[in-house]
Image (cartoon, rainbow, N blue to C red):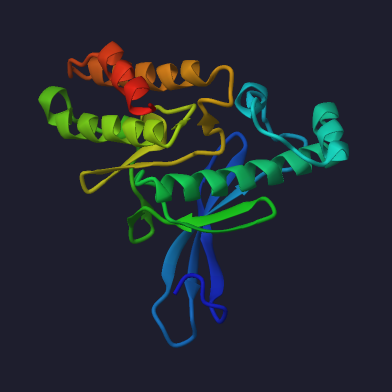
Length: 230
């Protein structure tokens, strides 16, 4: 239903703001039917947008329009607009890849200019909490940890790393862990720092679980991820 030509969208308000994008709640409906809630992530293209870490993530990617490449490098108004659109397209492509690879991500609906429309993860109009907000400790987190390792493994098998994985971009929805914020997804083979990004993802989540009292072995997990790629 969410992709039907006769559907129309109603904006219900903002869910959260971020450094580079804001997330809005959208209801999409066909006249005479119950609507479906979607999340619209809108990248900013104005002067306050901050794509400060994009360089290392972008290694191994190609932007074909040389004028756009120069504009992004100069950080002109046009360049920032191009960057916003580029990151929106990158996130939609990453969501699509992750979905096809069996990674639990919001279903990607469509991309338009600087906006990515995707499945809304939550109950009613309330977004699912981030894993970082969980009050669980020790063994109570064992299942969440297992799911996170499965997520890392699914990325590795597809030849990619999330690139910025942490408890702040993992949602917990009725016991299911869902990954969000994927524009910086890294092709491990094409990016010279690919393995470093993968290792950092492991360390980030491992450290959080350890602080919450769940013992784990990040070096063993990383070794398994490397093995899963071949």
